Amino acid sequence: MGDPLYQYSWLILFAPLFAFAVIVFGTRVLDLLSRPRVETAPAHGGHEEGHAGHTEHHDAHDAYASAEGEHDEQEYDDNPLVPSLTFGARLSAYLGILIMAAACVYSWVLLVYSQSHPLYQSVQVFSYEWLSIGHATYQVAFQIDNLAIAMMVVVTTVSLLVQFYSQGYMANQAGYARFFSYLSLFAFSMLVIVFAQNFLVIFVGWELVGLSSYLLIGFWINKRAKPDEQRPSPASAALQAFVTNRVGDVGFILGIMILFTSLGTFDFHELTLRVGHMDKTLLTIAMILVFCGAIGKSAQLPLHVWLPSAMEGPTPVRIPQPSRLWPGLARLLPSSLPLLLWYRPTSSACWRSRPSASLGICLWALALVVLSMQPVLACSTSSRMPSSRLCSSWALVA
Image 1: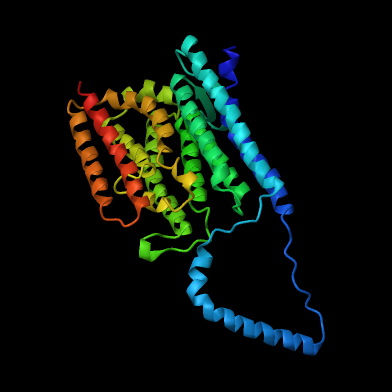
Image 2: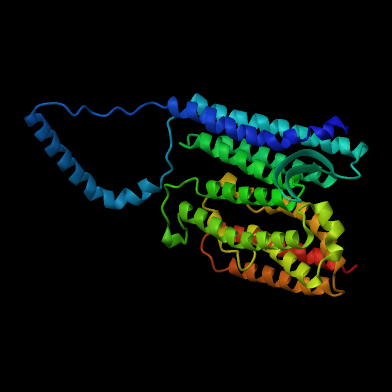
């Protein structure tokens, strides 16, 4: 039996999922039930009263229609607000923040504890046999190591700060409880990637991140597009982000399946042991396809088009969007580097640095031709990814 502090770290993983379930099936239902009902005027009365009422309504409608053309756009674009939040809505925020705070404290305790009791190998904290066909076994397995501890600190801390900020920023929003359920699902999705022990689990977390982003970007689904400002509607922006990321994820899953069919396993450790028997060309193709998933999530050329539109979501959503790839890279890089280094040309850093620099220059130039400040910030965020890869590429030369 391992150290209990490490063994029970799965509580950090499932804490946001628990918050999501409680908010969706509990506090949000309480919020909907406790909202004041809008009373409708009775439809009874004499024929003359009904006719007079209909005439009055028709005249009022004509008067309103004359002024509607000027103000319809602005009124429709206003966020649906409520006079005051219900107890269920406030409880949703308090519950989400409290559970995330507990997970954040636990992750920081693990980080401090790991300095005096480091993990020299990964420790499996949860495992479930999902499917067994013949000699092939598919497991939903989660593990923890020193890098996973560091990344769970980042995820839980940033998620806690985002939720704490959202408590004030999203005040009086009609979908207040729903928004906090989406944030909890987003945190759980990133933690699934951090804890993943094999490609099967990491792909599930990868897709959950895409689903969470879709829900958060399209939160203000009532808003219309603003063509004069080159701003799409949040619903269109969410759909664009979802579809564009699926294009990258097709390459991601194809690369995973090439590795599985060639080596017979999804497990990261087993892949490292068996990669020496794999054809070099096929391995190169597989890793390029796996990298396509990262291209989509980090909004790199040619799958960069969704990030400027994603700024149509609420401001708290824009904070974790650019950083959602880092948990995936933290889990994929240690697992993929042994596969890449098994066959690495001498000039690999040189040919990797050229497209990285080109991507950065293209995105910097793209930021010069947009009219809104939000896409400019999005382009600058996206361009930092090639810059970081450029630095890492030349670091390998040393």
